[in-house]
Length: 243
Image (tube, rainbow, N blue to C red; front, side, top):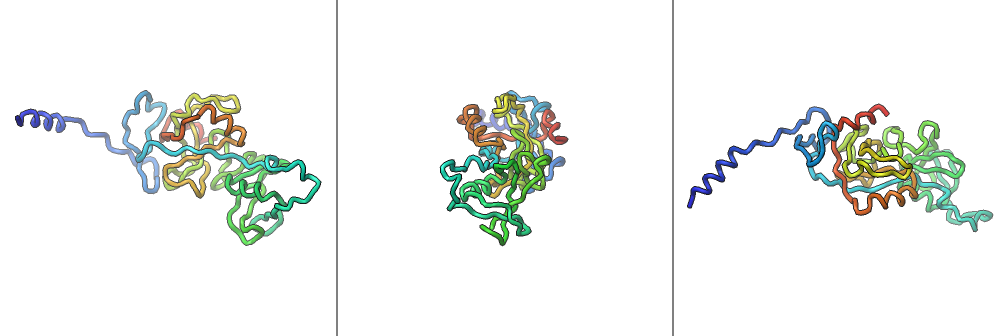
């Protein structure tokens, strides 16, 4: 009766051990590069290696808050009773805007004013509402600015937890490969860590889609996709390092 058990143990002993993780290329705080195990249907020369830990990351979206989206046509000739004054970190007055727009501006991090100026969240301060903002050079930051003065790129920038993925790192998202984007392009699955956020902790990823309208359009393509599996060291995505 014990013979089958001996055979099973022998087979287990003969099974190849998994390859050791290669942690020499990325300095990720609290994480190491995942073992180089083949993922079904993907060539590693194309798509890299999954990040160690839970393969599935929660997918969310973010966009520019647009002042025009919060205008009330019936109140154009009247003072907005809900308007709040906002300032930059030096205490200089930026303007007066609807409280709802300012709330969304703080949540999204970047916004577009009705006059075409681009504005960015600048953190807590001692002026106005206690949250300050900064006007940006729209030629340098046409879609807002991410963390550490990184330029946000439509459908390429993502916000991550920098303790897990360092800023500037490029990632491959298999779930996005081949998806049509609202601008008419076909996504190649490549994104770059350009931003962070207070609510983005550990295995969460926010995808930058520029506008709420684009988000609504994209929902039709990614309906039911609530999770993504980021891959590191994807050769096909290295072009984003130089973008």
